Length: 133
Image 1 (cartoon, rainbow, N blue to C red):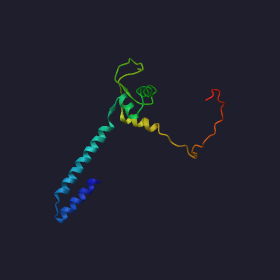
Image 2 (cartoon, rainbow, N blue to C red):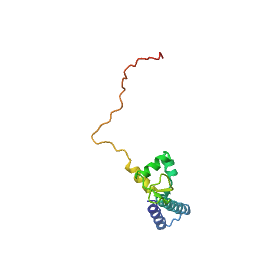
Image 3 (cartoon, rainbow, N blue to C red):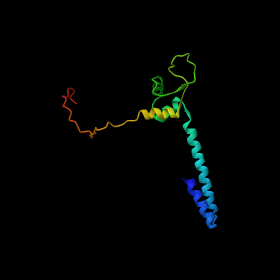
Image 4 (cartoon, one colour):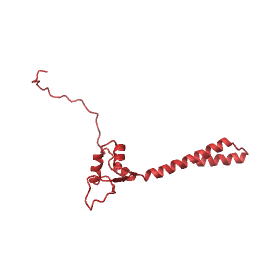
């Protein structure tokens, strides 16, 4: 969209005979910035992550990540040869897209036609204090 605006502005300036070098430099630099963002987005989507990075990103323990991998919930690649056995721990790598798929599958969706009520205070039964506190 910014590129379209810059092209339109350049066409307008050229038609009117105006050449603002500051504006041209600004739009050139914005174009470069957008190219950098696009390249970063593409490389970010194809990153391989370690178990430690997944655990840090999700703020969970590494053992939970290993369990998700062993249960087949999180798709991973094991770089260590285990002779056909499932390794308890290994050198796993997880693609960012696999992480996103896992997170998408774990999204909480409300039940249709079910209204949630704010929690009502409950009265707990009185308990006899045998300790004298």
